Image (cartoon, rainbow over all chains, first blue to last red; front, side, top):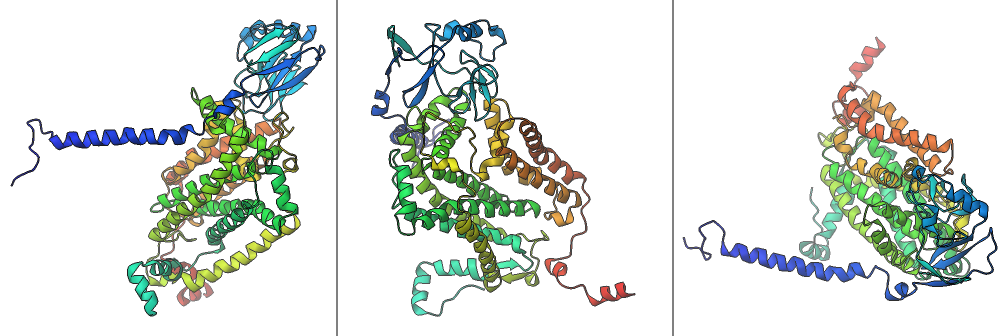
Length: 175
Length: 412
């Protein structure tokens, strides 16, 4: 009986190389072909372009708060009272679920700026409520303090502080 | 008995594509246990509801606009301006609930009579796949009217994937197509909501194929042994299913015409507002048991894993249940556990609809614990220690009147 493929000494046929090479190239090619279909679901160029928002602060009185919109998400800008700042600063950070000093969460202690999205499942927390007089998420019961740090409930992390800078004493650029 | 058409035209087709023979086998001659009760009607009712959802959905999409600025108004346009639009939309929204009602009854029927046991494991798995696809489809459909509940339901559910370590945030951004639930999200949900029902149709065909390979289970849980035990599907079960359908349509119509919003939420008639979360958000009733399990754990990843785990363990059921007796009729202890488990699921449904505060949190935790205890611990143990009642000799012996010798014995 004759065979068309000679058998090498170690039992590997030359055709085996062809199978692996052709299969490998086919798999890589398929992966490349699938990628555009996966990547199209990521944010498009126009969505990515909406990367910063400027907010005027002079109308926000002490003890009040506005909600700005940045990348489609609410951003809380709170003009904190002295009492709120004191309450945030005197907490022993080693007792926190997500330890972070208040000073690391603000550039200017009067202004607390953070993304108003609960780190649990994305609801918008309510201001001036909850067990720590900060924010309370009504969806699943997470309590945040006057620095927006998680104190009680299912949320795993503090409210996120977005990148921002003060362009002047009364203007802040978020993003 | 194989199918041999007399009509020459049909004969010509049949030799080239034996589709009529296949349908004849599936809907006419299919040998069915002769003792099926009305609990076996819910499979065909689920099939009926799938067709209702497909037809009403396709015509609704002719009037709906998937854009954040127009979606809510286009749904109101359907309700007020489109001819019979109110009827079609209420059929579709109540139809989703009806679909889940019949599917849940169908699943609990399977649990009671052990329909998941060998050789029907794949049949059970395909059913669970249909159930998962239904949940994905219903969730995305609920987002389309772009009301407050639509928006915040979409936000909470997509955020579940954010619990995945390391890649969670990347996946959520990918699902959204942005940095929050927005127009790209609505558009892809509409596309997938249209696609998935056809995927369900495909899996339903596999489900029926697997069913007709093993044959239907029945209230005794014992297999068909000879011709005496079975009757052809048509006309016996076509008529029985049609009668069941008539009764079911009365219930469906009662909701449709007299309480079309009873199973919905008033908040979803408020247009979506990305800056304000409603004070009390709850999913549609058919998701409540799983939502209760999610909230029972005071940890994000833990809650999400337990919720998906609640469905995952159902896939292992054929191997967790150690008893070789299928029907709960002959399993005195399992029968009681089944009803406790059913009550547990009802409690979870109730808790899922309540706010996240005491005493609901504690009750939710106990009910969640019991859910897993039943499936992972009690089912395997009961199968090992339970002493089953004697099984009847055959399906026929079970349903036919006792022989006269028995009668004489009891008279004596």
